[in-house]
Amino acid sequence: MRETGPPRTRTKQEEPVSAPDLAPVRPGRALLLENIHADARTLLSEAGWEVETASGALDEAELAERLDGVSLLGIRSQTQVTAKVLEAATDLRAVGAFCIGTNQIDLFAAAAHGVAVFNAPYSNTRSVVELALAEIIALTRRLTVKDRAMHEGVWDKSAAGSHEVRGRRLGIVGYGNIGSQLSVVAEALGLSVFFYDTTDKLALGNARRCGSLHELLEIVDVVTLHVDGRSSNLGFFGEAEFSRMRPGSIFLNLSRGFVVDHEALSRHIRSGHIAGAAIDVFPTEPKGSGQGFESELRGLPNVILTPHVGGSTEEAQEDIGRFVAAKLRDYALHGATTLSVNLPTLGTETTPGTVRLAHLHRNVPGVLANINKVLAEAGVNIEGQQLATRGDLGYVVTDIAAHASEDVGRRLRELPETVRVRQLG
Image (cartoon, rainbow, N blue to C red):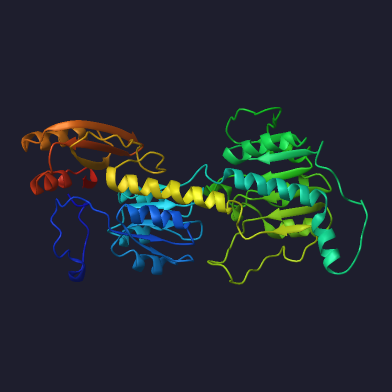
């Protein structure tokens, strides 16, 4: 059964020419944007997909046009997958975010169209942690200032303003995968670790939890942000927070660009209240390498600016490329939704010698009984079945002895709760 869903309005040019309703899903076209690692292309190509790549991001109109006939999409942080894009991409089955964050994707709209979304929540954790530590050491030793002076021909052999990190107080805002690993490694270097998170998190090692963000800001020497991309974090750190930081402290943001007021940060650096900063993410970022970049922070002393490369090591990008591509492949071929961020979770186990029906639906009582009634009335024998739910969605995968008829597909598709039906294998 080819991938189907609720009826959609089509123009005459969009009418399918010769695609029987119950043709099993086969590998088709994949589009990988933003310089995703070559291992992703290799893995999908070996699984049968025709893979196209592009080095930069696409805007909404460009993306909608390029997704015609594309079943799998791979992006990083710059491409915005909006509701309008998803409405136009009638062939799209899954989106892979080859990064940690998924706030660039309309997850609700993706689920409504039966499009699975996957990301890489762990693959680049170490890379971000190492960059944060390197920047903390560089800023505390004022290496950026020394480096600039040397390039300008000035020999300034002085210890003024240069400190060891050992014994200094590190404040971590956001104690998730990155924040907690940074906590452990930083403590091994001799830093005293304090953290703040809006949810209850277990402290690792000797780290101490602060009851509020303001409490943390008033006691630490270094503040580093590792918060997620939820919309409520817009403008999370601004004038009030910088004012509460200790004089001569250091600030880092390797999380999301829109969480920090850069104008406020610039003022506090220029006044000397903040001794240094490292920023890897920005409210507005160029779509591709080589494009112009503007920021209030350019040219400021003891400020490190990097082009959103916290997770961009060769090791991390290779791991992410393999990990997310495998999730896309397994969902497309087997219906597996393990670690999907927007669909109910089911694993990859299949019954040998069977065909799989994957049915995504609205989570209301009686859907499973209705599915099984359709199969029973058609004389379809069920060899295995799995069900999972997530919020308003339910997901049933049913292993059957042979390919289902077109009539079975039509009846499943016409169930009022159906979001998308696919036959795999």
